[in-house]
Image 1 (cartoon, one colour):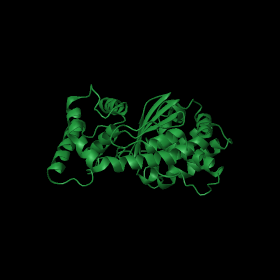
Image 2 (cartoon, helix red, strand yellow; image 1 turned 120 degrees about the vertical axis):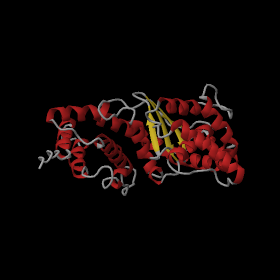
Image 3 (cartoon, rainbow, N blue to C red; image 1 turned 120 degrees about the horizontal axis):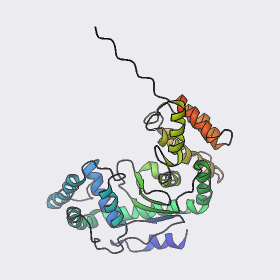
Image 4 (cartoon, rainbow, N blue to C red; image 1 turned 135 degrees about the vertical axis):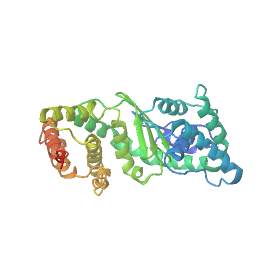
Length: 322
């Protein structure tokens, strides 16, 4: 365990943002303002998640802040909405227990009102979970991070982000994690309590999330290749195909890195997704994208084959009028 991680575990969790820990390019923190913001957003958009032990007037006060978030942000995406991106980034940079200035007035009011309730009933528990998650994830990066970064750069043909700030929080939007940023810079929010982000999967999901800064649906790594194959073949692929390839890449490269370290039973995250959002992709990915990662075929050839084999069925012409 590095000295930074040990410091992060020992520092008083009274409410001040935790000291950052990390292994370049990753930098981790458990920040009280980010955690409160993520919990309010999660409850406003996904499902109830009030601090433990709240009841009576305190619960009503908490709900008032949640309602303010719901009115402010509705179903706006923290990945795409500029106001939410800026708010999370501002809170992430808070170096004191005080709320940073320059925030939208309505958000600042909601956060200020909710913070005493959060500190009293939930923060210590959340911070403990966050620090434990960091203490598990960081040593894996010490051992395998450089290897995995180089493997991702080789697979994608572009440099990996050089600065990845990871805010750890039990609540991390509806999927357990998300990333904003582009190119060299990435800012990830990742759940410390979601099962799919714990244990060895933390290593895969850190690489997956950071890759979002260099991978896009129709540009960057994967997206540009898919666009080229789509144009050449005259086929418009499913909208989720780029993300499936991203999942497969980080999952397979992590599996290999873990296997070289004696872990022979790791199951990449995508294996639980083929019957949901990635239905119909498995055979093609395990044949052609695996072939590319193994060095047996080119990336362009793999993309063409995947696009051709996973193409949506042609639309049926409308039935003639009776």
